[in-house]
Image: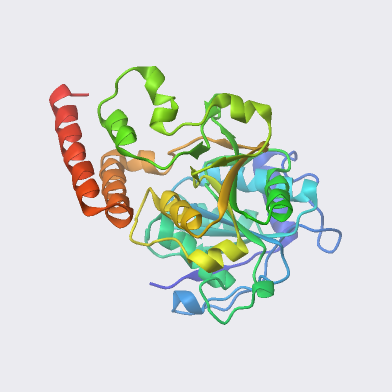
Length: 349
């Protein structure tokens, strides 16, 4: 499997994006040479994933978007991201990793979004491995790479998101202001405006039980289920959490260098939980920054394969408990999962 890269001209992408999505999203994007924006270089093609290299020492931020058959959402995501970067005059490299979509996503990126680097994975390699393709291309995971040759931070952004305001600039500013913070997430909301949790406590037995045996709805939104109070989001001040969703997770360069890349043993789900757990173990703090906001529609790729993704979810969760918990604890979780799934089958849809 090889990663293939492509690039088109800024002007052509600008015209195509405006024609497809209206003038609003990219109307204020600068022309080449007139101001900071997402950059694109012509990378070196190679049959080896790790041999594909991008220069990244000239940008403070890299944005990585892993996409699978969500062409329409990806277009909106990229438009909103480029508009946000332009508004904040934030220089960034934007990378889309396409997991062998068959809906024209890769061609759309090539022809409409020239500032964006495209990696075509050739097959669906999953979320963790796809992100790592981009991270390795940026130079992460190489022991000899000096920090100044890497971007200050990497923002993992889902393709079913819409960036509001100057969210990436706000998140990057928080990392610069507080050196002990290794990762941040914006406030999230659904497309219809409803509140969405961005930060969570690390899961325990209570969360497993509540997930498998739904009790009172109020418990689902409680601290018992790993949720933080909505009032904390509404105050607008950054607050510490155990972990954040991978939908819009920004991680500091030094933190990635210390804990390593995403664990590719997870095909889908729980990758960000694993990463956040390792960050916390290494002494980094993780925060939600409510002054930055991103719309997260949620589950647009996984909804295409509900049964397979439900199985992948629990396989990943069990792997997480085996990795980070004592053997008896992990065995108890496995027993609860078996009982819970049997209960669901007995209860029916």
